[in-house]
Image 1: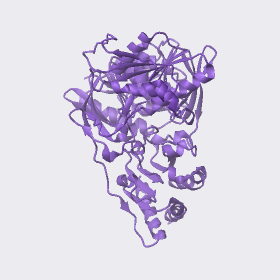
Image 2 (image 1 turned 180 degrees about the vertical axis):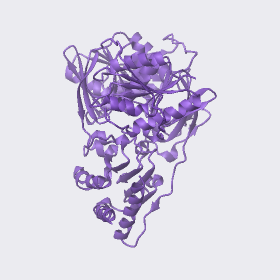
Image 3 (image 1 turned 180 degrees about the horizontal axis):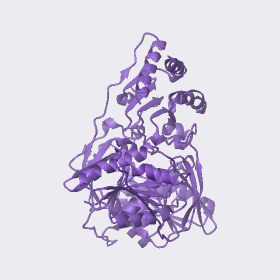
Image 4 (image 1 turned 135 degrees about the horizontal axis):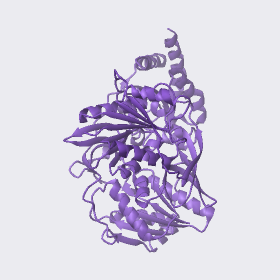
Length: 264
Length: 327
């Protein structure tokens, strides 16, 4: 089976709110001193693919990224985690591409990579969090899509998967080719690559394309545009309940809770 | 202007609209008024005992209801059916809720209609003929305003955070539509399992009692937090750390990578309040916290709180609440 895992490099989402700045002119977060990391759901997707290969054997996993030249680091890490091949589409022209552009570029690259059975993407990215790549990619490729999957196993002539829903979970069966979006679960926590494999990853080949290599032309009619980006000032002053003893303070807390809930 | 359409996918066929459907209708009505157009509702594959009662209920808040019964909800067929009905209506905007099926279908529906999609919308505006929406980005650390450049705008919304719609004096028409959508068996849901504590979705809860890493294990969730939640008529929730530790099921997770909730009261117990978690509760009306650390970020977002070990507070709090309820 041929699996393509799309991954995105993002600004480290763990940076504390007090260090987070945005450029309202560029309508993007400021890099500051923050690291660039692979989006966690993309790593969950890769981990799910690696476990699938371990279970089934005879599976090739190609990681694909569309991003700045620095996204090579995310692909090298994926190779160190033991993906089989990597391809980078360098974005040297479009700042902050919209979800449809991303899906179109990825679809073009996927077709250029050759045949495949399964495309896996993360549920959403920790930066813009649009959560649209899987759906739009499926439409671009003319394939069905299953979202919020946390486990995939081979089944006679297809795949069986479990996905998370509002209130629990569902089991689905699907034929390939297929696009899935992956969410996190205790079973797909990304593995830590071995030091030796990290070193090795820098010696492995990596396909690199520009948008011109893909003959991708930017559409005239855009999908959407971010017109404002700001940091909301929503801090409120916390009223710490008072009292001389714990009993009095908890009494006061109970009263405040009852005030709010009985007003409903 | 063209109409606004709200979509209810696979809703429970019971009398009475849930808060999410009410909010969706409210958001749809206000947008339709701004556009000077009508509001329609598509009810796709309603389940349960009385889908007709549900349709009548929705007709009280929208101008036209289209009921499409495609049988058991299956994602690919649902998408094709929705795309077909929407393309007949030719809407300016299609609004959906934040349930799994709505989130999943939104970008694909936009694609099929030649429109553009945005998810997790908390505000919808009309700006010089164009639709603008706002949503949180960067894990709740920033707010973006996005202008849609294609029609229709297909939006899934944090519907409970929108005010409900007023009832109409004359209910809208109800039409049942049967579509000839080809069977698509490339994917099939073969098993559905509910795991939540009650029939109510966490997104619907008006009061939530939530525990974090500081709770320390599964037992206190069961022995301390659950009884407190029951006392308050609240739903139980948890932070990512508590879910990752396996203390409670992942369906209870609130945060950027979990549920986005909008209760009137969110009681955060032993939760630090990392921005990842706050992204899930930014639309909560009131946040209160119990935490040992007075500098915990959660207190910056709280209406009220107490700096104390929850082990001392919660048992006493239950006694006090019972006393207040009896007085």
